[in-house]
Length: 275
Image (tube, rainbow, N blue to C red; front, side, top):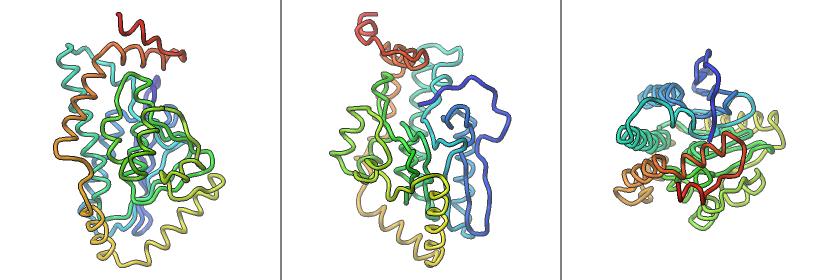
């Protein structure tokens, strides 16, 4: 989960087209590419355009400045002159849209490759897991720190379970610790690790070349078959998850957890419980 203190002057998502390959770079490097409204709106627009673009065959998703994505912008989460009821509704709607975004990325007809350097935390893990192929540099770091901020990993949890199984996902979200690239590969969170950023780019390019040797229609049908193997989560989960996230985000634990994160100190949970 990320923080923000500076104005965004460049597009929040950089898009480059190389023939059938689309490269999308989350572009808030000073905030470790934390997701604010501008970033997710730009990403949603790209997803919508790709849904109907059969000339695009691969989407490579990466982050600028040596990090992939630090998750939700926690400053924006708490900003705005809203009543408690309005804040609760806004948090629930934001989280519901997050669920829709992950599903939309996974459902794209293009093969989606996550190119991961540095931090891939919280919602950034969702991007890792809804991608078809996840490739990481040796410096990549992964975490589901929501509970350490007084929040819940509502919409990333089904994707974590699908990618690496319930046992590993359970430990990741309940322990909240950061794991390295080698451990992420061992538990199936990523498919392969390259030693450094240059080697990662070469690995991604080689993977793209392999993908482009396949028939585009057959790949799209194969992705649909993979999705049909079973539901991502029980019916109603996304809505229940959004409601749980909103309740936690509106509570004293989130206020304390986010304050502790911004102040770089351990959270005082006992004070939050009594205050």
